[in-house]
Length: 148
Image 1 (tube, helix red, strand yellow):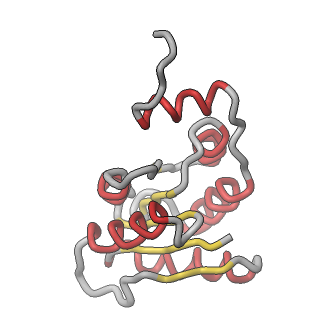
Image 2 (tube, rainbow, N blue to C red; image 1 turned 90 degrees about the vertical axis):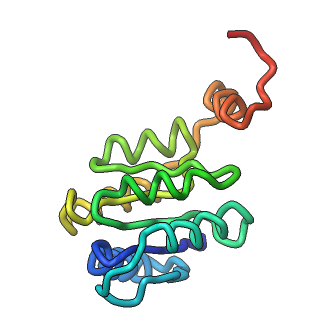
């Protein structure tokens, strides 16, 4: 699985921790920046990662900023992107099982490194359940023609 990573200045240190975790687990990682804790704008990196996931160049993405909220909003503008801002393992699990989330957004000022690693591991290990949840994804895309 190819994971794209992006962050702003607030998420730089946590991004580095998370990348090390994925590399140690044998995953392929594409670091799309930022490359330092110097001030920068989150949308630059959210756009890079979301575009690559949307186009299929990357399988999934991980974005880190101060809260995770701005990253999720910026990434969610791209076709077929289901970006979630998560602060706990249960939400990470359900975002994959029921929503097939393909971009995980974390807030470095909200979760510590230990919890962020556990959230990421949980999110990576879950699959999409399909079935009625696939119908809901189709509704989000605007293609669902079923009942109310």
